[in-house]
Image 1 (cartoon, rainbow, N blue to C red):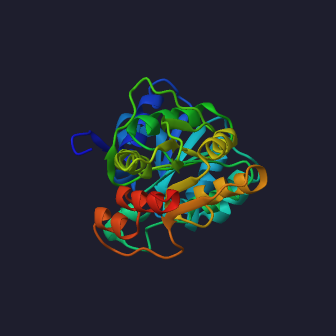
Image 2 (cartoon, helix red, strand yellow):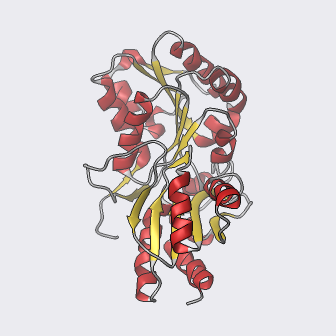
Length: 313
């Protein structure tokens, strides 16, 4: 995929907010002194009166966003995933989740691919934390197109939303006519030997892995599961029944994220062998993003290795 256009989904987030802001005067954006990194600065430049920098006070920012939502505004609160899901968890739970307020959280710099910032900033627990909040929608887009459409879909739905965007540029795999739906997965390639269910930057890696597996005689179905909650249970069951084996791939701890969500559905509704690819219950460390992803097995080569062992070819 060397010749494929690559864009960081945090850029997509900023661009989508600006585009939405042009036609929706009720949209406001909050940031915690990171507008340059989260790319909400794109919105700020266009609509300075509707952008609020709350400083390095993420918990306060969440409470401000909650208050704004009660006034008929649609606030998007942005900061790094480590701070949005971690530092401000209590406020997200009690001030947004409990009263089910219409606040959207745009969390950037999630996962190991934060790279040189190291373990303190490499949040691999956010899906788990946000999934446990009743009524919270949790999503992670695969590319630029999906990220922009996801932001628009989040604006249009009523209720709290958590979206994770990445620091690193990732391949653009969708055309502009792609229709994103909250709570719906997407079959990117068909297959019968194993189904690979991925989200975020692992989707492009899964597609690359499927091509390599095809050369080895293994037919892999690749599913982009951008919405972690509510999960597309029907699509998961269908893949399990038709493929017989499932591999989940996520830039997140194997505990509490997409893999466990898929396993929960299958254990109760359609018992199926599953292999989970993710961060194996450990902290990350500082290093170049690409090298770290390979070290932690979040890459096409490792998906191929797991699939070949799983299928037995």
